[in-house]
Length: 431
Ligand code: UGA
Image (cartoon, rainbow, N blue to C red; front, side, top):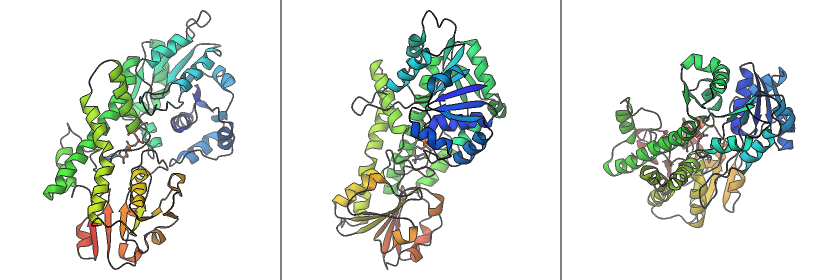
């Protein structure tokens, strides 16, 4: 099939590369000409494990192309995926749809034959209806169907999530469009038989409801972990004990610094603003957002206790600063709140990050190191912020020459018993 991905960001690139891997002819479009030129030369705009190889292979086979010419790309394709950004307004938390609508207006001018217009961007419920309205005109009769096909890709695991999906959700009332998309996804759904044909509005809401549910699950275990800390219980035992109940499920029960990234914080808030518009109270999602927002304050308080309220002149090393492992994404990472607060209190920060130096942390008294050892040297406190594999089996006594130092493990990567015999005071989350 001939596919056009409009928007070569995270979703568009990963999905486009995977569709081409399945044998389709794919063209990834972006208004950013530099990005397109770079992609043609094999330079990736994002860090995602496996993506570079996938793009290189399919580009070489000429199944995957890149272009900044939207009109031509749309005209030559049967299925158009809209994958452009929908940034959230910082005050109202509503998604800004100007990029989506701009693309739709451009598509409208290029409907030379029947095409399925699929929205993959996360958009408020009823956006599909609005897209359809824009596209309708005398000339365009029967020339298109508008479908919602939300993505469920985790950063760092995106290719696996795409090729081995838990589910594929297709929202449309058109039989014709449904058949075309079922055919497109056939190689993937054969493996799992989890293809769901829903109404378009349902598909749009599924995305928000899924992310808000997962965010709630994480927040729930984080709050339980706060109680565990008071009762000297290890939250990992609680996660195991409740997660083995199939109705609850074991995944997304890792207590930690709170959820971050480009999706959960944005989507939970956007869902609340949709609910407000339709005068519906979503008190659980509201509490989740509030609780997660207070997480950094809670962590700062824990650090205060760990340091006996003595921040001044202390050297604190962060191992990892991104919002989670497997990504270079800093959006809504707790390090962005913790580090400035610690500097304000007079501490000096060292950090090591596997994906390199971060411009967001370009501040006085913050130093980047390109290796773990130099970053840890002579630190008073090591904060394991991100769960990168390379932090999982470190010999801290070798890394840090200081006689006495402390570790605050925000991801519970280590067993506390390990440190009992050593001269290291170790603190985790919910234990
Ligand atoms: C999330 C969803 O998992 C995807 O299904 C969805 O498609 C994507 O958002 C999106 O809307 O585009 P992502 O933001 O990449 O993917 O990251 P997750 O792996 O879901 O983690 C989100 C946050 O939750 C991270 O801060 C992570 O550290 C935290 N988390 C996750 C926990 O604190 N505990 C857990 O047990 C799991």
